[in-house]
Length: 393
Image: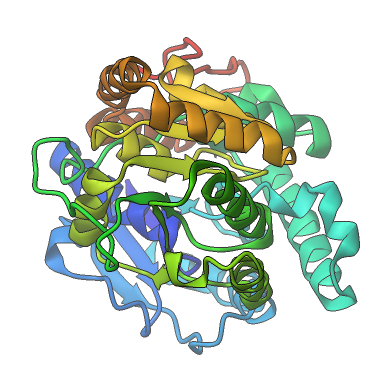
């Protein structure tokens, strides 16, 4: 088959990590099918190590992150590209697919934030954008031959809200980049010389970063300080960063809360290994790739008890209510003060992280893609990947 992969939505964070790891694994596994990846001229991460045996085409999209432009291009021009290339199948990585594609489509649904109740507080333009995403995802999933999710939680959530037929769905967990392990060198302290608590993920409203800063401020007040909070990732919600900085300044800990910005994977891996613990207060996650990377790095994970997070971490994390600061502070204090608990969490995290594999993810995806290329009316829903089971395999 000739398979087109629509990757124009990959900007940073999880979408880029998915491509960086999945495409080489898919290329190493599959030498029978031909892959064409569609990117944009301004995506700077493309290189031979990522593409493997895929051929790259550039979509003429401007650098501005405009959902409207992307949606227009996908609906108007992507079908023609598939037709010109003689595509047998189209795989769309991020929720939206052309409704008039000339071949079967597989859609990966990764974004759950458009369905959050908190969106009622957003500006009108933001609510309109989210409504467009919801409508586009509904239309794309109802047109698709197969729909892929990164967790059981995400599948249950979306199928319930959008009425997706579970018989055409599959859950395929993400894998683990081998750069993330407890064996490499870490960063022993923050810039101030203090040990540090680490958050890694791009910043959006649902990531709950101001809550994290407020909880860290409370922890410093109760425990007498001694730590730095490092927040690593792109900011796509400047208001969240400003709110976090304001909270830190008012609490007198402005010098100990560092918004680091994005780092390359090797630097993120080293930063993970040096952290006292990893904290993840997100309100909405379809998977949560940084959780797997932190567990593999040999640091304890303290995380929100919402959405797909407990599914990913299992019994390897300490969970808190991401809307209850007292609960978050108590769990952070516990992991800092109880050495035996830390050791158990580190060991459990390494075991849990070892169950995630990009090779397995690629194998399961290939089964879905090949099945979509020869659709059957009697498909049954698949759990935990193509072959069943609700845990990571």
